[in-house]
Length: 126
Image (cartoon, rainbow, N blue to C red):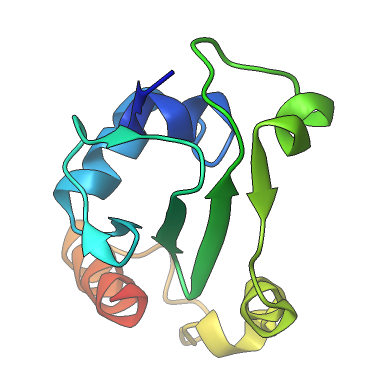
């Protein structure tokens, strides 16, 4: 059974919401067999899915299709996680690398400061 890539990624719990999976597809962060995938791309058993999530590149092999979200314990029946350990280690990067220093007593960031900080963090994700 073929399934849309955005729905499949949501069903195997790669994304919390289906709209997040759709946005990732639109942002060219999801590939099927090495080719960027639109949200409507159909996946079939044997396909290799590659997902850019933050600093890491996750890889899954589709074992069988499914039409509804499954519990975390059942995900290995439908998709095999073939992500190398080196990529998984990127999720455990030291928190100090993402800390932005602010002077003591400077208070909370202003809207402009926050937007600048968000732009910097987005640039690091890409």
